[in-house]
Image (cartoon, rainbow, N blue to C red):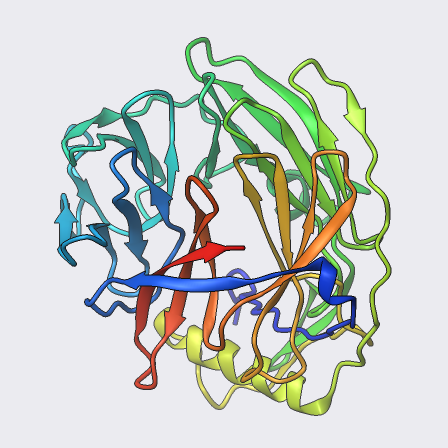
Length: 366
């Protein structure tokens, strides 16, 4: 039996001790009263409201912390009409373009629709198809979209040959002209043998370090280097600033970590028809990476989420500035994780409730 893509949930751990002077404090200010399935990211609007997607219930939403009101934008459908921008199948990510314009990325329809901050659909964003059948996730406010070209490792070579490039290109697409250029390269994953029943496939090692890419509104790009635990910056004119590696504690991968990942692989595989009794063996790294998620602050910071040894522990983020220098750590309240940034020190978080649902919180960083 030929299986589809390998779905890997990377859950890792590691906390280092540092001085209190380097710690940022978060205080919860408000919380939307509604509950959601799973939050993507939160984008602040100019009037203080936020937009986000519920990726479990597949809804595009806008919330008002002043009134507690949550509105559903557009409509989820099973079959999207190409000329209907208000429709979506799997809303997965939100970005703010220039002025009043929002971009909502539909993972299933593989398209980006444009919306006003008032919630009115404006149209479907025409994007030159490059790098395979995956959506463009990242946008700046000066007219470009960005896409990691995973096609270079997923296929495209001669039949029967395994493609294992040394790096993965990051493509910049000029939206108005369709011009495409490569602006960065990410380290290729580490691979090992994965077993699915009687079939053996090559798969990325779980808990191995990975690079993350992001872009600021002004087109400045950054790359968080997983193997070195550093952040490199690229200006719009192509000049690079190499960040300083930051020391971290290597934490061994435990049998409990492996069991948790395999359990989640089986759970996710249900929706793709994967037999639950199928023998599954994944390749695992020996130690956990310095971070397993990264998000850029529009003001010129990158927040790297440290993995945890205990899933009940609070999440800690290492913050790097625009010169690639580590500045501080920020600890989130228990059960909360980073979802986005706002003006004047506002940080948005996804809060896990006791029943497994999610709430959206607004925090203030001090």
